[in-house]
Image (cartoon, rainbow, N blue to C red):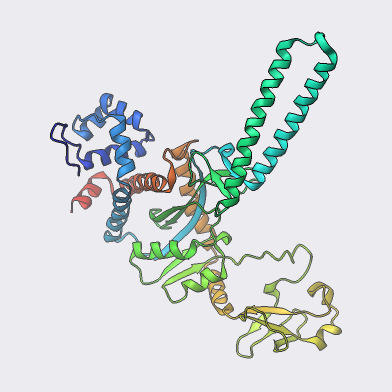
Length: 431
């Protein structure tokens, strides 16, 4: 709550402003100026706010200044759903999606972008200088206005060149090699389509597959999901208050270290193993074709030969074991499909049993990836349709997290109205 000055008007109740923001995100009018107009002309908003009509600055400042409290309100609603026994499956679907920030792509600088732009500016300057040389040779036949305009363009390009040199120096000193001028926290991120990268944020969500409620969410400015399995799994586990929770994820989250970190924490990751070797495209045997015998600690290759652990060579990191069978490889008729070297050297991570246990969980749930896709990708499609072509209205990681919390709180409220009805939901909130 706010303490008004002795000569000022009484402050608005935070509950009133929170209701106004929720109304805006539920009805797809989240802009503060639109909400100011709605509070003055829409009967249902007048009823909701008690005929108070805060101006757009008050509405925007409330969202800007109360980020932690708004995020706590979103988490508290999840606690309400948990108390109503809605999270009984102890399974969540996890995914991340890129959302565009208010920072335009031209206002984001990387070494590659700056180098390419410098090359383009230098080519433009050379072209205009050549045009000036031709004008000098032509003499009085060339209008003076044209030469003056070319000179102005060259001066503008040289100013742009100086700006790009300055940006190049800033990018070189940046920790991640990026500088965003409009929103300093926004980062350039690759998307699935070729040449369709955006400057924005990576929104992570965990969704309950049964009732499609968002259990946990986070906004990060890393363009990949490989380091988000543990933090998002931990958030989902705390939100559901489950002893063990199955996390359904796609290959983008696959990381041996992340899966190992989940061991013993009650987080059970279930995802396909990523194969980046490219062996299948070359017509070679893949890792799954070699069967491991845990009791004997050896591998059986597709030709039936046994590959035993070798002590002659060890990985410099100390956590990789090597398996081979020199005699079998020398006379093997299938060696061309197995390896391009003289003999097959098979590597095994010392914590490979953790990954094999994850594969067994996936094999026991043949429809796991279909459930994940139908659950979490449907939510992202709905959310992006709600938010439109300009997803985020605020700048900075702090403001974007607050805005996403409001959006997800509105989504969860709408889902609960569909599941429970408005009357029962109001009774549950009051209780």
